[in-house]
Image 1 (cartoon, rainbow, N blue to C red):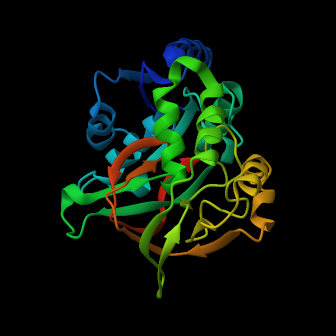
Image 2: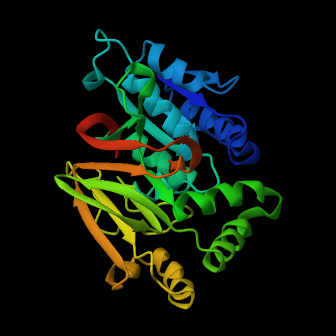
Length: 302
């Protein structure tokens, strides 16, 4: 391989995990006489800037799902002279959840590196988000994995405040909201169907996995031109909810009568309140939001 790899990493991902990965990657690439340049993120938004501006055909992004999200937004904002068809993107898992890497079967460093070194690529879909009621460049964002609203966002927000507890924080946050259910009323549009009722949560997924390996959308594909939607019945009892949430890890939750599982090209959420969203595992932006799919737009090592 004579291509020069542009390596971009987030030093704070996974409590410094990315630093160790970079060192291992340097050794592995040096052994193979593969040329590379390394760029470390200096602040929030720096990865987006690097991915939108660096003149390279081969990228390796190291970090977690939030890092990948920032990178994807950078690639999607490249100018018209930078054809995305000519760019290949690889990912190495340097975060805590690494949901996207589970879909690639690259949840470990070595497995992910092998995917990149084989050179095989695949064009994947991306979620396009329009925030607010007006479409301006600042209101358009992109997601690789998930857009969650309601309980899916509440749990993520609370678990973020409980980081000192480690990975168990997700379980504690989930249990808290099982017994303190927060139901929201919203106007929801799925393709051409309009509904206005109460919801417990809605998850829109481009991938099978979310969180730490949860199979939230077991039928999802990265290149089918559709995203998968999970809707939970707002009237579900606390006991049923307690039994249902663990099934997210196996994908068995989709067989529950309290779960609606759909595939779509357009989703719009106009809640009665302004609610924060879970976008690729990060708590940011608010409703209203409309989501569409951009098919086969990014070329990734797969």
